[in-house]
Amino acid sequence: MHRLFTLLSAACCAGVALAQTAGAPAGPVAATPTLYQRPNNSDCVTTTSSVTNFFPLQFQIAGSSTGTTQQTQVNVTVAQDFTVQYMDSYKIVTNLYVNETYVLYQCGTTPPAADMVPAGSKFFQIPLTSVTVVETIPYAYLQALNVTDRVYSVSSDTVAPCGQLQVACTQIAPMAEMLNDTDYLDTELLPFVDGIITSTPNASISPLFAFSASTDPGSLNRAEWLKFMGLFFNMDDFANTVFGEINSTYYMNSAMYKSAAAMRSNTTTVAWVDRIDNITDYANAFEVSFAQYKVQYTSDAGGNMTNKSAVAAMTNVVASPYSVNTQWFAWDLVDVGLTGGFATEADAVTAFHAFLRTVDVLIDETYAEDPTQYDFTTFLQTFNLTSNATSNATYPFLKNAAVFREDGLLTNSSALYNGYGLGDDWFEGALLRPDLVLSDVARAISSSNVPQGYNFTWIRNLATGELPTIQSPLGCVTPATGISVVASVPTGAPASAPALSATSAAASAPGPSGSDALTMIIDGNTTAYVMCPVAAAEDAPTICPFVSSCGATLMTNNTNGCQYTPCTA
Image (cartoon, rainbow, N blue to C red; front, side):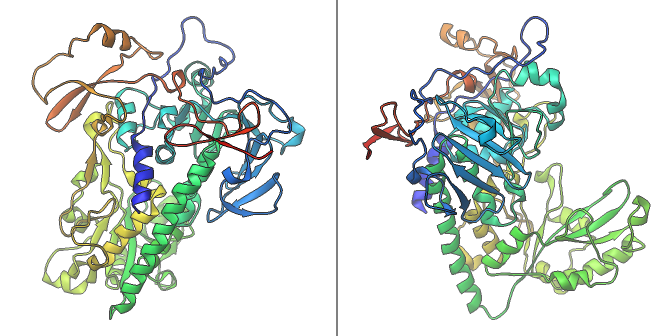
């Protein structure tokens, strides 16, 4: 566990060269995008020999291989939705969920001919040097790989401190719908990035690839998408190491939690529920989720998931038309063209409360625009419950003070301008760290599962008054990142931006977007002024290629720089 913390701490706190938001260049809009220019570093090899193997077996992602030769397909250990085939100078990566294929060829080599790879493949020159992250989830994986210095712009909802700093510095990725705007792509995005990461495929945008961790069903499946991301940065072996630590910690802790559960006299029934209003105009429902990863977390933490068949068999309960793993206690369905459900809200509440009387631990997943204002009273109102002696005796989860939410780690909303709101790390870092999620679920099932004084990461207890932890962009201001506060004043005090030295003034000259590199961050009682770093594509440090130009030295990636060792002929 200590090794895992060290690996991910190094990934989190490595030097961060964040990006300026790209703006339109002077002059008329170009008809075609400006060609992306790689930074002048040593990512590229200097040989194009067809006999050079740039991806030797010992540096490939770990998995079950379909053969023993170099040109073989690897099926990863747990994840279901991607594969990779290694060739001498390129990799063929397939996202099975969206049915797209990506050819990743080593910078400095000639890309393979189109007839040598699957039809319709997209080509990427790797390692990537400048990526925009349209959604929150991929940022956690990039951070774990220690490549956030290659992130050009991020989702406005990003929770990680250095991602929040990019938002404060207006280095904000486009909303998904903006990717359909060709003028925007040609002038403000494609000239500055060689990778666009999102969950939705788009065949017409050549540098866009789909990252589908959230749809791979198991808890560890989702974490193993770290290997997928690593392929684009030649961090295959490092991704193996990090995932291996997460995987082993998960199973070690699960064995402990299951053993503790076997010693308890009673089983613990867990339900993951939420309330949705105005599903598609006017329909409403209480939902019970049986998503595979939630079932897995519950079982592996020593609990029992509430019985799906029993819930589905209840009168007027219907399966959600949007998810096969969700059951609805819904009403007003006829108003939106759906069938079944309950005639009135009162009827649905009665049936849902009957179900709740079987639940020992409840995890409330109801959406809240501002989770910091969602407390135990809000929970009771949301589910039409009252807090009194009768209710506590009737509902086991109230008697047990076991009402939880997953919104325990949030962004600092005051640093997010233009009404972007709060980001929730349950939809970012939690996917990569199932070992930590498992411990949170185990604590919800029984506090005796975790050491005294255990601090939750995501799953907080509403019934005992636990509050979310708020992460600040100032968390990125550390000696390791090289980012510092220029000046700070008490929040609310009249003050102007601090005067800059000649060096700082030069550094704060407008970037492509025209915005200065000095940003103001409001963090509780302090208002700080921070210098925004340069754009990722302008100063990307080297990710070592595996083989040097002479072909006689093996070059490997390492968090402390390139390492060279003799290799066999």
